Amino acid sequence: MTDYKPKVLMGIPVLYNGGTEEQMLTMITCLAEEYDTEVLCYFDTKKEMVQQLNDKNITTHILNLDPQSSKKVIINSIKLKLLEINPLFFHVQYIAPGLLPILAANKAKIKNIFATVHQPGTPYGWKPKLLIKYALFRCTQFICVSESVKSSWFPSLRKNHLKPIVIPNAIDLLNIEKLGKQLQSNPTKPYIMYAGRISIEKGTDILIKAFSMISKEHNLDLVIAGDGPEINKCKSIATEANIGNNIFWKGHIGKQELYKLMAKANLGIVPSHFEGFGLSALEFIANGTPVVAHNINGLPEIIKPKINGYLYNQNNPNTLADHINQHVNAKETMDINSIKDSIKKFDINIHKRSLLKLYKTYNDSI
Image (cartoon, rainbow, N blue to C red; front, top):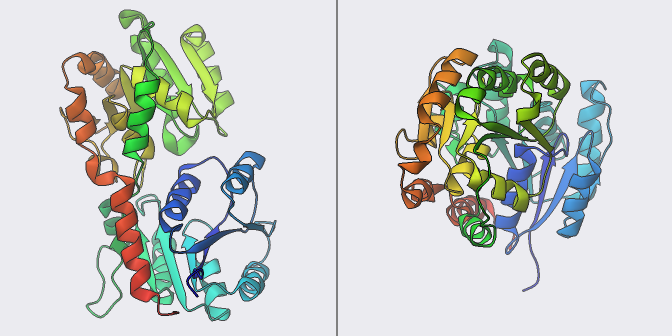
């Protein structure tokens, strides 16, 4: 009996190289000592992400469902797999198809159903907000990654309604500190940096337009780490603005190279139109680099003006260019230890304690 670990199944729509997948891995790491955790992916996968799970000896179940399948097909397929695996906990990453895996778990009579919502409710209309409140009713516990996410989806609830809780996303600050000591190198031409998905909601096009306004004045480069559906559009904007030679497209890179680039950057830029949490902002700050970010959703919970970065209110190229122009040399006047110390509450060990406390509350299997 001493070797027994209750089974947790993490449910996720796709396995790509994104922040949701990364935070799911953080959860699995935090649970590893006390729970046997596996992953269920409903739709598409990237080979490198599946390999990353395999390298960590995490069993991965891939349904390969067509996202355009009927709701009935999706629910029944997930239900059958849940009946086969029979986990004590089914922990859903609540992004589209949102409610359907929760309904499948209800049908499979899974004892404990958790759901973590990563995105804010601000871009969505009444129907998704109604569905998520119904999902809250169908779950054992609902988790939000920031206070902003919680308030945007659940601005008001009845007194007798299950209350969602906030467990912020996290990073391994000690590991980043160790890597930082190994990655010191000689300075090069100054640059600002973006890290993340290249997509409409992330505002990467706004950054490139803003960069075109200030790059020559400050003799700056722009480093972009990540990929996504808008990459060709963004490259076209750069070419038309005649700044293609000043932008370095790194694609998806490993953490060691990413953190090296972050640590050397003058500024990290987060121009998202909406952002439930802001993992890249956290990583820039953990590497001692201040951040200029859109003042939206979860980002103000991380960024403290004049301590670890700056916030701007209107997400357009002119406003962003003004803020980069004002703060491009801010790193020279800020205390690097104060920058790093400002995010201690987002350390993985604090996340681990909160997550294990939640799971233990419902773990009555032994």
